[in-house]
Image (cartoon, rainbow, N blue to C red; front, side, top):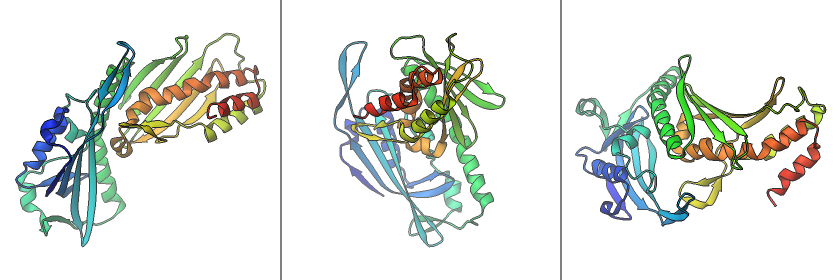
Length: 328
């Protein structure tokens, strides 16, 4: 095992990253278990990003922070093929400085194997060797165990993130399925409200944002359904949730693409639905901002246009021109 360190671990601010670095580099036998497999720790890298600033509206000041990253490179042998994995553990010095090493290990599904497990394993040139029968049942069993172990971790992290951002929420169950319900107020301080619901299934999370228009003058159905359909088709084809890369404000990416649809009857409801695979969520920390900030901001920005076209107040053409103007 080699250590590539851009900065000394003593210069780290995030306690969890510092403790995890010390724990992994001091292992007498450099092996980890993740995703149901035993891996050799081939390399550990530590990097500290440049100082950036986040504006605090409460105190009207810029707060400095940086991203600390611990990169663990892992290897194993499957028959005669080397299987490599890279785990990049990122921590924000402004929000995550007090997280502990065990929490990171749980979140990234990293486990230190028992001595008995190491004794019973087979090795070649220090790399653990696995001989598995590749069939759908085997793959399904591995995924089932992995996702069950991670489900509660995502719930715990999301609740912490909601509390830090002052978002009202409720944690309960829909039958046997864990559920978190959130309430988002409109940024312009109107009476608009979005309700967000996440159902945590075995393999994925079902995230739905719903805007309900309860204004009495709204019709029971659109007078021009063809206009509404044209607008919804355009939105689903051209409106994306663009997010800043974690720790890099100058880099933007589209990680998730929600499906947006309307229902009407007693009230007009506008829904943005996103299916979030746990394995993707674990690798993309921006998922938390997507749930709490970026997807709600996107839906807030288009609800008034959809409602206006639905009510026949404006044409689909005018609404589309308005959306196009945002990118100019």
